[in-house]
Picture 1 (spheres, rainbow, N blue to C red):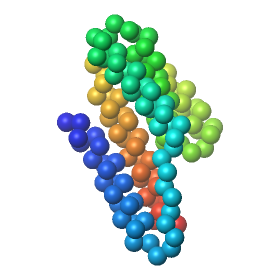
Picture 2: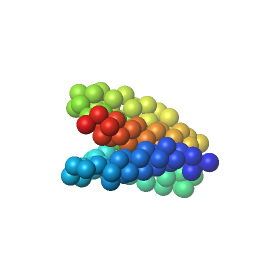
Picture 3: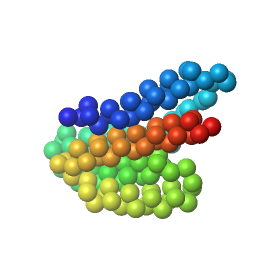
Length: 128
């Protein structure tokens, strides 16, 4: 089931790699945003640890959900104002839905955010 979440991002990343490889101009550097990656990783680890502990640490689970929301917001938008607004909204949303039964929701959210990020890079590559 979880393999389907990664498939769109993997296909988009492969398409970007093929297009970059076939370009006659110098290679384009496509780097993944470091801050968003670190925040998503910390939130995912925190949430996964609380799921493994049986959900006893409610505040740690909620903090992990909020970090995942903030990381997704930073990944989706490039304009700082939109990042800030969406980080607050998605962080609060992640805080309130953080529950051990919602691990699939967070997985799908992260998978979609990464797929959208790769789609934005592909669109910029095709346009440029």
